[in-house]
Image (tube, rainbow, N blue to C red; front, side):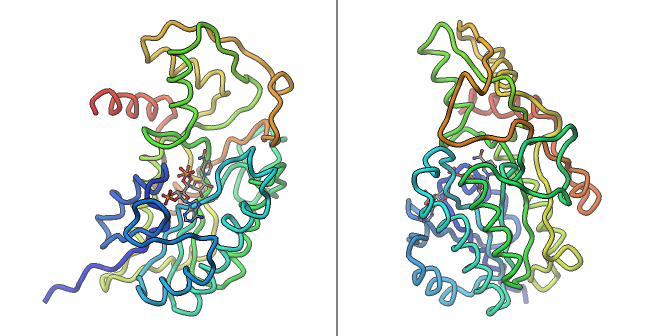
Amino acid sequence: MNEAPPLILLFGHGGQLAWELRRTLATLGEVTTAGVDNADHYLDLTDGAALDVLVRELRPALMVNATAYTAVDEAESEPELAYRINAEVVGEMGKLGAELDIPVLHFSTDYVFSGIADRPWKEIDEPAPRSIYGKSKLAGERALLASRAENLILRTAWVYGARGQNFLLTMRRLFCEKDRLAVVSDQFGAPTWSRLIAEAAAQVLAQCKTPHGRFQFGRYNGQVFHLTAAGQASWHEFAQAILEQTAEDCTLESISTQQYPTPAARPAYSVLDNDNLAAAFGVRLPHWRQGLTLCLEEMRET
Ligand SMILES: NC(=O)c1ccc[n+]([C@@H]2O[C@H](COP(=O)([O-])OP(=O)(O)OC[C@H]3O[C@@H](n4cnc5c(N)ncnc54)[C@H](OP(=O)(O)O)[C@@H]3O)[C@@H](O)[C@H]2O)c1
């Protein structure tokens, strides 16, 4: 007799990454989502009791957390909410995971790093976030690690996709509205398509699934891995690549971070080294330019 597919509780539903994970994780089990908008289970993460009730009721085989307070600038004026969603909640997921024996896959960010570096950041490098968003995400990583739940953390960066709020969609809108656009050229990262992150996460989890439908991270339990597209770009280079692939007539100017002040400080250089993920799971994302081409191709077709 066939065993029932394991239940995967995905926190998040319509977010950039959650939307993609709903599809890629479906190959590994029955995915049920929890969130505030259209999710299978209504869950407002600011309500601590609700998380507890839902997890105890569902008893999933795996929790995947694709939620976050991602408004980097707004976080500076809403630190309590940012810490609640990005740190406290993650700790609570961890505690539930430890008590009920449910592994947790969690996502974090390149913004945990200071940005002062002359080579891609490795997992062993010391984080030193410069913003409330980065600090709260780092606090979330640490709360999960301290919870003793079986866990794995994937740090990604500069996420974009066909949905949600992201640089790609903002640029496409602005190219239609403006003749000239000034974009920061002294911050460097790796633009990463949400689809590719979700596919890679599913590949990692497939290797952690036992024949009995459990998920075990084994020797990778409690480890952080970097997961971004290959290569690096400034926001200006990323914008230029988007412009080249759209038919809009817009001139791009390059400006410095100083000329574009924002409430939150961003790392100047947050390119991540992805070698550990490739060595552990044989998973490596393509160059960011390839990811962008694939994403735009799909957007044109839908
Ligand atoms: N965006 C980036 O550039 C970037 C860069 C590096 C790392 N990351 C990390 O990647 C992960 C996914 O980010 P993303 O870009 O997909 O974020 P996103 O598009 O902003 O989506 C955020 C998700 O969080 C959920 N959420 C927020 N507040 C909530 C609340 N009070 N209760 C329940 N759910 C709530 C939303 O739920 P609904 O679906 O219900 O609306 C949504 O699914 C996060 O861990 C983020 O820190 C993102």
